[in-house]
Length: 160
Image 1 (cartoon, rainbow, N blue to C red):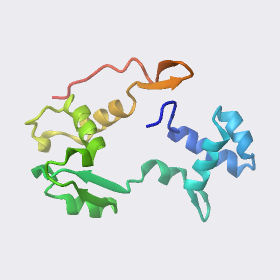
Image 2: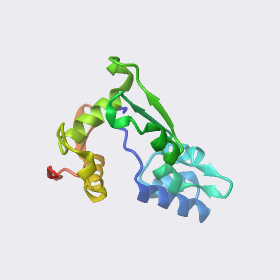
Image 3: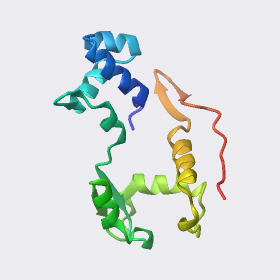
Image 4: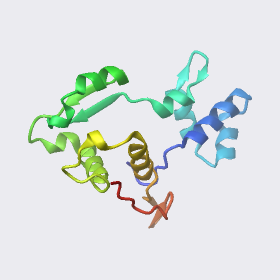
């Protein structure tokens, strides 16, 4: 992720949709959301549909999944069909083919250590883990300094 990149939140996507629908210009939307006009323009172009911007689909879509050859992915065909997404299996012993996958696994392992029986993990527990990972503090580079942005006081929670 490039330094200084701040992904749009779902609330911002909804605001872009509503403001665009009301006839406000891209510059006007950018000014109101305190974002770059380029960010707003890219969002509108990426998520344009026949009936306007698709802010809901932009937030919820999964296009591809990449996994290793672990037994936990034995049902990858069913997952791929359920999400209508392409599923890629990395070449064995080529961890560089799935860098984000390995990073995310490390984050998840903070909550669910190796050996955890995933059949005992509830959907609510998965949602808590997902929310905590998605809202953890991140580093942003501005001018000559680095700073944290995002929720800074997210306590770690080990789910049993």
